[in-house]
Amino acid sequence: MSVAITVYRREQCHLCDEAERTIENVVDDLDVSVTVTTHDVDADPELEAEYGERVPYVEVEGSVTFEHRVDEARLRSALADAA
Image (cartoon, rainbow, N blue to C red; front, side, top):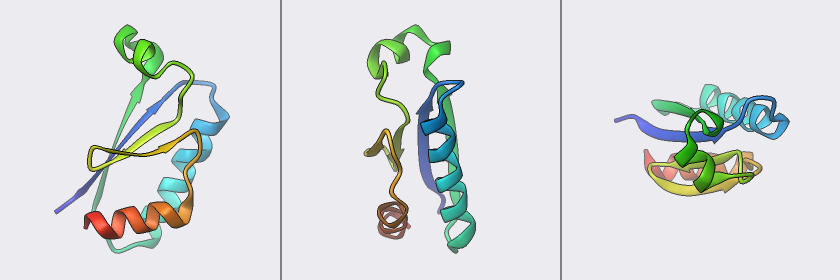
């Protein structure tokens, strides 16, 4: 089973870049199958209206897990729980 991570982000967003690096580092370090899907909120008016400046916005298995910053320890725990 693959754990689904969804990232809502903007281009030119340093917090978004940082969040994606943290996700990548944690996933590379764990023995868990993960599928990461990324959405650019600026490319979709509905997503932009919903998420606005609340990016990065990260869901693990459909549950909101992080907003603005991804905490590495919490992500590890969320992935372990979901696996």
